[in-house]
Image (cartoon, rainbow, N blue to C red):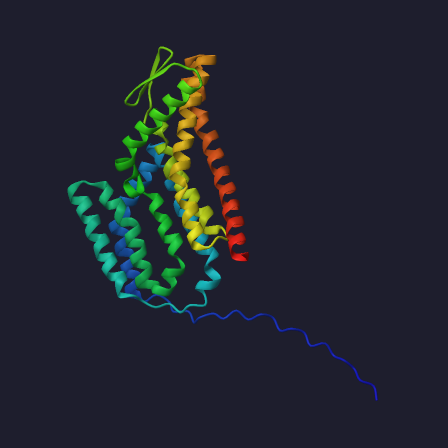
Amino acid sequence: MELKLTENPTPPAIIEQAPRKPLRWSEWVLLVIITIIYLTAIRDLVSSWITDSQYSLGFFAPVVSVYFTWKRWPELKRIERSSSAWGIVLMVIAILLRLAGAVLGLSKLSFISIPAIIIGLCLYLLGARMTRLLAFSLAFTIFMLPDPLGLTAWLGQPMQLFASSCSAHLLNLLGIETAQSGIRLTVEGFRFDVALACSGMSSLIALIAVTAVIAYTSRLPNNYRWMLFSFAVPIAIIASVVRITTIALVGCEWGWGFAIDAYHHWSSLLLFAVAIILLFILNRGLEWLSAARAGS
């Protein structure tokens, strides 16, 4: 008797997909009303991105949020849409902030309410499970705001003074006579002030945003991700000290006109690139440390 073996091909993987639950007409009406309420706030927000180069990061924040939402799409399809009452609470708070900002003429209040209304809508229209999956994408929308987290208000002047002091000490160690008076440096007779942008504030917010993306996409455990994220501020400060010091060195060697007009502008991009490279190196180091501890 002849036996024939027949192939039993593996059936294709079946992706479980929750039944689609379309938006009700009342939910569409809610979206339209909120869009109308926020039209001028969004217009003013985009205007701040255009008029102030320090806030140009705002253009990229929504793109990053949409990208990571798209990356989560296969998981989102497996979850049935629901609704959370916390969404209503958050939307009410956001709309009150928006109205207060409009009445009092405080655009910052209106801007702060934008991420809040987005999160509230997600909770109400998608439910808590979907919103948890989108936590990073939603949190990243904070970088749309001018000076998110109020960093300039409570870190600006201390960073200016600290960067000025460190640069003065470093220049003196290098044998270049430097005197410091607050944020003013006198380097071999030439005086210049360390502006807020030069102190690292202009790059700090962008560096925090980049660090958040690197930490989120890394293979590190959560505690190591937070450790990597915490390096953003010291790296920004170190980069600003290096920038101020090298501006002084270039001024002493090739003239202050070249140092202030030319080197001052492109050195920011150069040191920002170096800071990002340093973050990737730290990420690799933490991955090695995490693997070594897990294996021990």
